Length: 314
Image 1 (cartoon, helix red, strand yellow):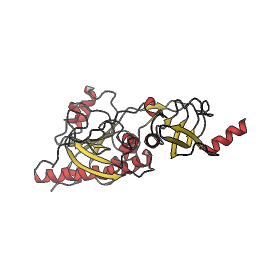
Image 2 (tube, rainbow, N blue to C red; image 1 turned 30 degrees about the horizontal axis):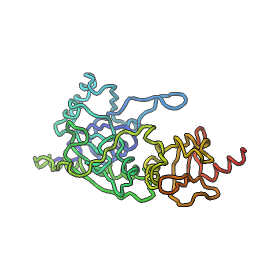
Image 3 (cartoon, rainbow, N blue to C red; image 1 turned 180 degrees about the vertical axis):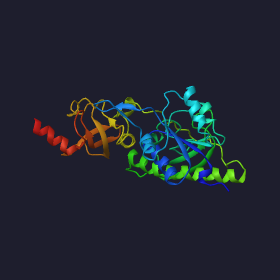
Image 4 (cartoon, rainbow, N blue to C red; image 1 turned 45 degrees about the vertical axis):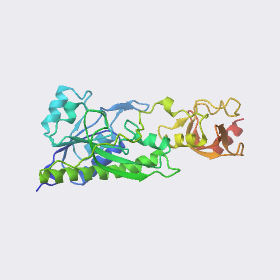
């Protein structure tokens, strides 16, 4: 009878979101034989090389770490093949060439932080919150040629609270996703033990397919010509990272110049045009009350503290 140690696993991932699933596999007793992650990158003022969250955890438990610059590099492919993996698991990594994902005999599955086929792409959690969705989830699926289109193995849903930001949703999905990864491996082991293919089902492409493209600085700019609720969701979906920001405001606003370039972390919808100790900006159907923000080069603070600072400096 097969068990957790019967299946040799190679794990591919980079950020905190991926490190949690790796931790669940290792602490759950699964046979992870190697880890693949992004090359180290210089960060901070000293430009010191920084390890990915996945590499940090892998090293802490003594796992071999592969960091290819190119995924089609012959030396990397030879090293990957040498581990004789039965299964590969991908969480928050880059797009894999077929020569990689088709290498293990049981294939490669991916954990994606959305209810596929919704939000295929690089930033599914952000876009679900930015679009004002009331629920999201995570999906495991087998990799195939088209990105994020493979047959679904398991899927689980969570509710998004009305005032929840993307940081909170990310953290809850990270924990839930780790459970989904181990459950998926269990299902693969069970199917292998019975000598049958794992049960999967195709994605339903008849539903509304909202995309989740990579987020750039321009994506994060607040457009005050939109509705108050759209702006509130935009800010929630980018808080705390990478954060929405003010590119421009209505020209007659008294803080127009002061707030240019400010990051915005929390706002509320209001119908009040002015209120002492508040930063209120008009929008398409009412007003936005900016509650937490950060001026360029300054610390994050609430609106009242910023206004007090402006008065003191004047």
